[in-house]
Length: 87
Image (cartoon, rainbow, N blue to C red):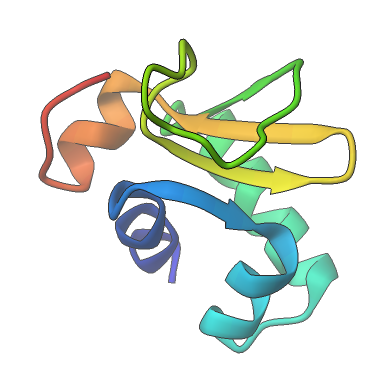
């Protein structure tokens, strides 16, 4: 299931927390745990900031998961695991 999270994020664009939970058919608390695991394992990183969903020219990269006050982006390791070039 963690691989699926990486694949969805690697598809590009900004993924809302709610949409990602729905696409994965998981509860928000389970998604929270999955994101925390991916951060701990070095595949995602939490960043401070706000994403307006406009990825062109975004300094954070082309892939992100957003929640109220929170933003996660793929790391280089996460990009490699998802089979795409690093940020």
